[in-house]
Length: 236
Length: 236
Image (cartoon, chains in turn purple, green):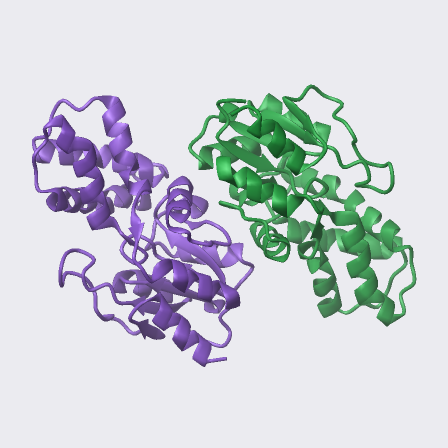
């Protein structure tokens, strides 16, 4: 860990509660229009379309499109699936921006403040730049730069996304620690040459439906970002 | 101006004093090695290689390379020109990073703090991401994102650089105000569809050798960033 100079972070699930936030935002917008549904199931259904849509980009089937564009397309699938009809275009556009209004877990803002004292920090997310900027403003995330899919023009877990984040900081992959609550993200980062830190988010996808520990070898496993900062501080 | 949602900034000369800072950094590194030269002339000579090197990228003669890479190549030209010999590779690498240690003009940090209350803000510079991050850390520049040449993978004044900064914020070019102390940068931004604000830096290239006013039509002309913030506040 001593050679690590920058930390890059997964965002959805690792830093922000996408599930609770999307459920809240969808309810706030749609309930007044008379829509009744299970709002957490609505969030889960939307998120279920996430990987298949990105896979079209990763496989080269469609050119790179921002996650906002994929989310908007996926929303149509979800609305159809749940039998929600008659939403106008303006409402759908507003609903799509629910992904820009996600709340961070409580340890995230203070954790990033501590971590940025020793390290360069950036998101390495599949979310687009404007989405990351809006989450940062909402939650007080003190990023040095916004890196990730839109800068790399491809989606994780493709190696180029992790490697381009390291390159943007003028670092070798081994000088960068990828931080995520998902073992598959960390396995891909490790294959791309990065160091890895797992953050426990046991309730990400509902109570008990998240990773409380990694299922792959990692360099560090932490309960949250403050625990990660403690462990990194102990090395100095 | 009422439709403006984001401000993007030229950096070298507009926000930071490249000339005085490069002279200081070069002297600090080279004088102890016995090099004697006019340090401001050293800075000017290095900067003189800036446009020709980027033109090779803009014209498609060489693939996109970070400004750090161009600066390093240009440094060889300057050292030869000034008859400075026998510097080892480590010293040249350290000297090249002088561009990461430039000081901001005094109005810049407080000006950006004010401007970010109403607007998204980002550099739209030809400098690479790591260089922008280091200048931001050194000078306390509270960017929302690092945009510009490395994200667009081409150099200003090509339209794509300004337009890709707007696109990263999900904005039309007319919703973005380009802020610069150089009329040619603003003319190019205006051609790309952006609004423009000129900042007076009359001493950028030495006393009286800078633009105290724009030589092209602009939307706003300001003495410094605080004056720009005053003018934008007056619109609300």
